[in-house]
Length: 417
Image (cartoon, rainbow, N blue to C red; front, side, top):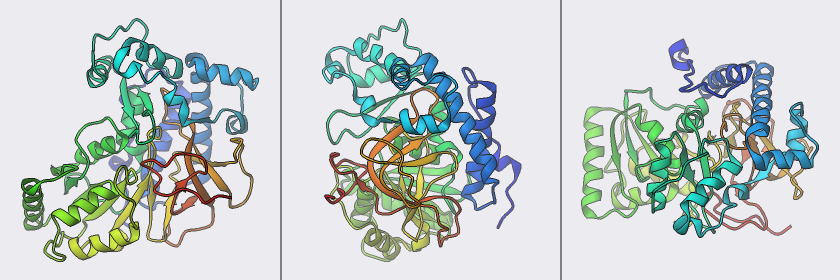
């Protein structure tokens, strides 16, 4: 394995304001751990667990002091600033509905009320802000000028989740909390072809922005490409081939399907340079679910990318990192977060190989409660994976939990039990 240099793992926090010193130190250690883990370097797992616990407990104290909704929930459970991590797992996990607790009418009729609502679920500094914006996009742009970055879910089932991030939390999202894509080329040596719209509104767009920061050249394929769009994408890939630079193809599975159908057809006409990889994420969104393994096989036939360099990523609108799949069909939980499996009452399941609703304790959620139960059902495994990457895994496919609506990140529903 190529040695990891200090410059490759040195964490960078853009703004340390508001962090306890101990929490900041723990987050920096986790950034390094995430980067090292990504490239297969050995880790002191006990030290990483201590750093993660320190950061999570530091965030708990921050949430208590600055998030009214969180403080109210803690009061119901009799939890104060000296709560333990077990206390947080058992009592302070919230569902993603907390980010939808606004009146949908405010999205169009009362943006000042929507702004005030942000103060009930986060620590972002909205006090005294009276936005003059008259549209949601203009409102988000206005808040951005105050260091408040509102990202959102796809909203394929009901109102979108609105997640208010401050600068440190947005920085974590854009760099996946330090987690690198396995086998991804080094910054400055690759190009990007993206099947997501430009912007930072959704998490997958922020992930794309993070990739483009290290790219030599970038090209976006629109969600509904016409003949001219397809021609431009083909010309971009042909230039990549001529330059012998690897390319990262990144976007939703449905976006990859469009690329294969509209650009890389017939099979074998485009053979991407060695080192290229295909990365999908965000679920199928509004596209029809398909067999991901078959999609990656088609990518191999039409783009020449080996199967072990095609991967899917799992995340959610509220999460600031990604779980990357491997050829064994597992999604790897990075050491920067803790995955917990819950029962229907949102209590941790203590089995060796629990199955239930996924919750993630995310220490990089600086500005909003980072102990969130997603609407997805998983099977958590702790045994070694055949791919060699250490740590717990989620056995694919990840499905929607029973009783939760199908949406972008879950292609299929769990069977009735």
